[in-house]
Length: 477
Image (cartoon, rainbow, N blue to C red; front, side):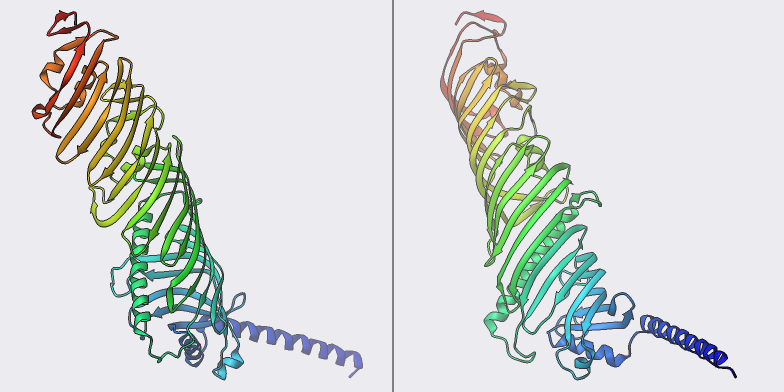
């Protein structure tokens, strides 16, 4: 056999050998992807999770040619196997040192999510509990000995786009080590408060309408100690455009808040709509049911309040331009009532000023209005109230309990019949008057009575009238 033929046969053999190697490698990869690793490997990796206090169950462990080692259909439980389910995750990419894993040493370096979907019940002990649904998650979590570092977290949480990064200080105690009772109680309280907060947030998200290609965007940076949740600190920024809630449209929404020592400090709130802009800030201790705040607004406040089921006072008013409202107050979340449209009726306390240009109420055009006001427990108090009308001016002070009675004192230098449409049953003598275009009128009145029955109001005062008609009889004065 010639040397040439031997070289050719050898060359064919080498090619065939490499082809078989490639076929075998592909087969191994496909098998590993479809069938997964043995139960032994899955058990070793689950033990690796347990070292970090995470009780996980992995249905399949595979090698993906592009992602590497992937745990599929992972379920995270609380405390004991098959107890309340904390999360379901369709895939996790694991960075594991296989040599250390076999030697049962620290081997899990990081985990990565690539377009993963996660479902987390808010209260694992309730089968019908609401769920946090995380879609298209991209995230990388570094897991050294004492700190869990979230390098990046990008995904959609119940439709809201979210970016998150931060670090968690992990406990160094052994799993069977007894935890201080006060720390355990603190963790339980924080978990309960956290669940309530998330539950409220999910309720709010269900009220929102926004474009799927331009959802609200939340960015969060945080640090926390797993054993001391109250030490958590975080910064959150929220941006949204073209969002509707119960008929009210936010053209833009921006909030900048920080969380320190169980306090949420809303450093900046900015809302714009087609009427104007609202600026605000607030501070909320999670242990409290009250949120103090400050606002300055030229937005369509009627529509905003009505979206939260609380605007009956302004139902009959149409502002030509949005009024300027400056106020400070408190929102109270104790004993929330629910309105007919399942929106919470916010309990609120207010003190501030109100200033408006032209507006229409009961088909009457007023040119200007101003008042210092306060509100608490269905009671409105307006002082230094000024109303400008084409026929003159009215001013006064009013204490109005919307559920029972009203007290007032006023000086009226305008056509008093302007106020007839504001009474369900107006005083009869008032309907008998008719004034000229620019009347000479001065009324000084003080009175009180039932909110629902003006006929029985007790009123005293004095008045001076210029030329007018009473029951069609002309009067000089």
